Image (cartoon, rainbow, N blue to C red; front, side, top):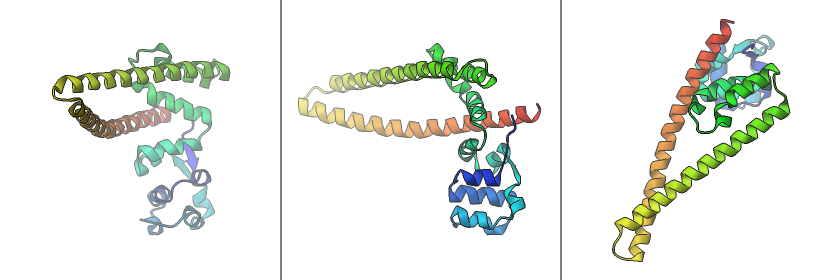
Length: 207
C-alpha cells in the first residue's frame, strides 16, 4: 500500500483553509502560508506546478497537522486502502466486544481488501456489526436511565414535586458528566488513532 499522495490531490478534496495552509507551510516553509487566512484557491494559486505535484506522505500530514487532519486525508487514497487502514485503527477499539460480528470486522475488511470475500459479503457482515452495536448502545443507555431514575426516587422521601426536581437535577448532572467524559474519551480515541496510524505508516515503509 502506497501511503503517498500529492498536494494537488489533497486540494481536489476541498480541505479546510486552516489545515491546508498549515500543511503547505510545513512542506514548503514558505512564510506566505504561515497563519494564512486566504481561501484554498488563493493558497493553491501561490504554488508552482512542481510544488502541486510534490509527493506528500500520510506520515508528513500526521506530523504537520495531527491525527484528525491525517484521518481526513485518507480520502486521497483508493477507498479500499482507506478501509484497510481503518481496519487497523479500529482493531484495538473492538477487542473484547461482546458480539463476534463487531470483533471480527477488522479481519473481515482485510479479507475484502485482499479479494477473499465479495462486496456483498462485506455488506452482510457490516450490517450485522451495525445491528449489534446499536443494540448494545440502546441496552446500555436504557440500563443507565433506569438506574438513575431508581436512584433519584429512592433518595427523595418528601413529595412527587421534589422527586421530579431531584430527577431533573440528576439528569442535568449526568448529562454534564457524560459530556465531560465524552470529551475525555474523544481525546483518548484520537491519541490511540494517532499511535495506530504511526505504527501503520512504519510497517508500510518497511514492506
